[in-house]
Length: 500
Image 1 (cartoon, rainbow, N blue to C red):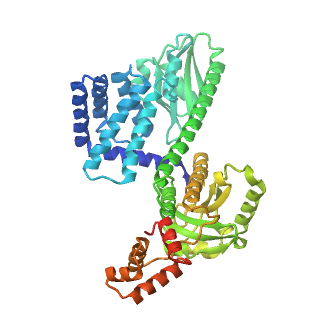
Image 2 (cartoon, rainbow, N blue to C red; image 1 turned 45 degrees about the vertical axis):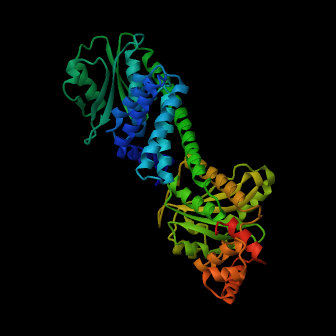
Image 3 (cartoon, helix red, strand yellow; image 1 turned 90 degrees about the vertical axis):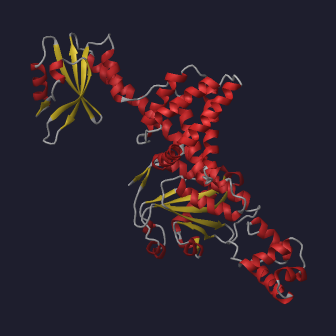
């Protein structure tokens, strides 16, 4: 299985669009109210907004099956109605519409961050698509049609051929002005030669040559008229240029994908107000915005040269937190850390580690316990502090193997940097993350809150209807669990880690 970042990002786009479609009546009403408001004020944006609402109305019933085609369809409709708007006006109109969508679905009780983020992502891609108006579209069929339509080339038509089940050839699509006799019924031949003979028998073959031209996974049949000596080399050169331009466009799109994923992930984890929240958001974010199914987050202590579990998402959290290993038991990770240390302060990007078979790098007890096959180890690294904080171990579920695409590899590395920075910020300047704070009972948290508010033992006992001796026992237990020397230190740690 080849993992691609586009899979997860397309799922987020579809989630956002389905949410918009689900609440379309309320959204449409909100947009119309905005139009009326702007018209009453004779605002310049009133007419463009009405046209933009018409564009969306034409798309309501369209599911987002093919993302690229859906965006292209939206762009074409937009250009028809709003073709003269500047990029700044595009942005203003779409932002106005997006704000109304958020308000409408929130009024319907939808408050989840991920849902609103998915809606935001839909509008960001629409804006990106509209602003890309005028850029070349690398559609192969459109490209062939443009070649045929050129008046300067002696090409009558180009046919795209397809293989049949019996190994023969059939014309799948014609480009150009093929004779009616050729297009009335399917053109088939057991071989390329037989197909060419049949085609020539249906047309005036004088001065006509049929040139079979294989290109990538396609097989083309070019009908050249008159002097065709330069047709084949010209077509080969043109196809080569098209191929190079399309590859460059694909690379650009891949780069945009990992940037989109990093932006969504950063928005997700930046909400953290405590170390515990940061740990949870990072673990869930690796799965929410990348095509993985499970994430185990670990901290690394350079002082003790060991790692310990912080959080498991889609895994047994208790099992992950109980893991504590010295790096001597993880030879390939030890070698990796040693290589990083040799680089010193020269590190900016710390690449992830892809392990095709987990049994070749991890202790067998964990491979069997969690049924690991292929894994990715994403270093949690804070570039601003030149510090390795830990790692996230990611996979696609029990006994599932996979390979990484280039865009996903880059995204994993950037996620690790973002996670490192937020953990460095939430760790309060500590050189190593400490083991997660032991669980406090609800009563212990109540006692700690009262102590933090300045209540004495007597006052806390009175408010909780307990004896002073019982409150003192609770305070002693809290200090012990939190490894704090006194009440003040316990309060500081509790506030920092989001316990109170």
